[in-house]
Length: 255
View (spheres, one colour):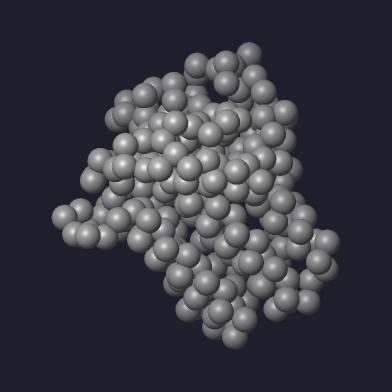
């Protein structure tokens, strides 16, 4: 099941794992396995990738990074198939992502003996890039009655959905705000008028989907298996400039 109605779907280059994610979700649809269990699975996969990087087993690390991306899509697919969307799952997923991303960049920094400052700049760049893509994607989904567990403005705890506790949603929302508040506010400040736009051409969303986490992890894997792990940190620092390029393109599209 897609996050968008058919008429507004675009080719998402970061979502290459979706077919396998749907297969996994279909196999789990009538089992006791919940979307949260799948999220825990992608956490384990991400940690295994980090462990293999520490031991310089880059092919294995790449495999688990790609598996992590697939499971990251499968938890949402399973939630939609079981008709059990939740803010608990949405926040748990996002919090897990950012923590794994931080550990991943710090691990690459450790292996390559890179500067801690550069590693932190790469992490910030990685997150801002992903936040821009999510910001545009959530605007599009909310505009066309797509998946609604993600909100354009996460400024207060949402009302818990059926089957989840409000106290848990409130707690996870606070953690989400702690980890993502800076990135969300920065991107909104950079492009606050995006929420007013009604025209989001598919080619533009495909372009911006290069900032999606799935594609970012795939690039990290490619750098590793090509023996260029030392280029990962400077690459994501440099890619931050494309945030301003994409914002400029969006503004020119909508006048």
